[in-house]
Length: 179
Image 1 (cartoon, rainbow, N blue to C red):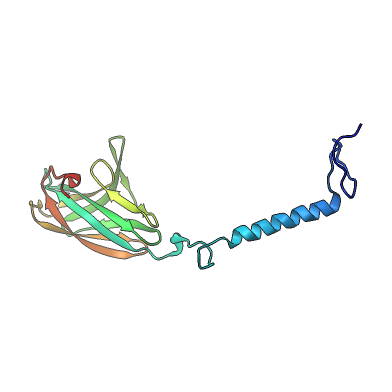
Image 2: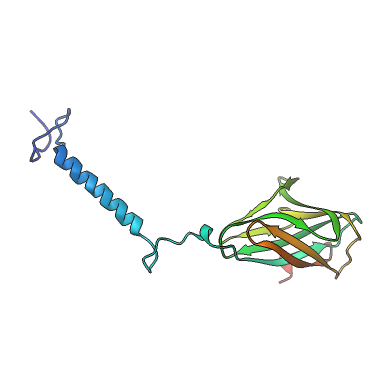
């Protein structure tokens, strides 16, 4: 006794199931192509393909910058947030007249590690905060005092240089408690 359903061509596979023959393969292939075209056509309301934020120019804003009063005369740290409402960018370096050496760092599991650069994601943000990413100012030209503003240049691969005036805050300053 044979199992399966007979098709117009009457073809069956080794298990006795209907295969649909060449006509079935052509119909199935056409359905796959049509489905692919429909999915490719999906996009925004204006009919264009979905906007790829990564192809847009970066649109960066720096906020919340501060430098705690340094505990020593030769080294300080800096914190800020970069918000990006455009395409991706990369923070490649930081410079300042206040220090001979300025480096980017991350903290992972309590261990500080120097970074060559940081990605600034499209439509995202890059945070520099205590216990995480931060900027180290080494070999200070002078010890910044409470209330002073330190000029810092952030260098980005796509956006160029953004100069930020970074206020020097109390060593215990916590931005989450100062809204």
